[in-house]
Image (tube, rainbow, N blue to C red; front, side, top):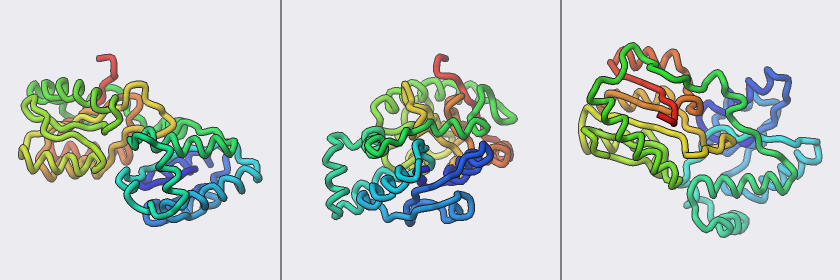
Length: 267
């Protein structure tokens, strides 16, 4: 497992082990939660940008018979501006002419492939965390929020198709903020500063989303941030959005009067 931040690496590791798999993780110092040491069978810790070390670990794993891998967790895209003093990292970035998320991850996929390791879908180990279609809270979006969701959905899909971000924040059918490198929570905060309470958040998958990596994720921090800025509704894409701590997330949303809905892409 190539492990980034959030709780996803631990969730994926436990699910894989429950299916009888042994989990060896490659983790990043200062990014991946140290709790992974207590969950995975073996963890190799590397510094960000240590491409040579990563290749060395891949060679070792290949010699030990590892043939499949999964990516789990997040690595902030702005880290491309860190650790570029390493020659191997410079070479990797030079091979990526447009440094959007998919292109950067594809460079890692190519390293795995060169070592003879197949990358599996991360969602194969997250079926219980995937959002189902429908209203997920005690109240559905109201008429105003529904209009903002419809508008935000169209914009978010276009944004995601350009591989820039997966979230937009809308108020009164005006796009207040779009997500780029800063991530969803900071995008929501920025929208709150610009438009105040009453914003609506829409988070979608990319068109033809590659479920091996970069699937949309929401968790307690998403709802907490929305409450802090006075956002009133969240729309996510059913069937491919991962929800962590779903029960607590729903309780917190209900307590604040938030509406959360998951819709299918063909609507």
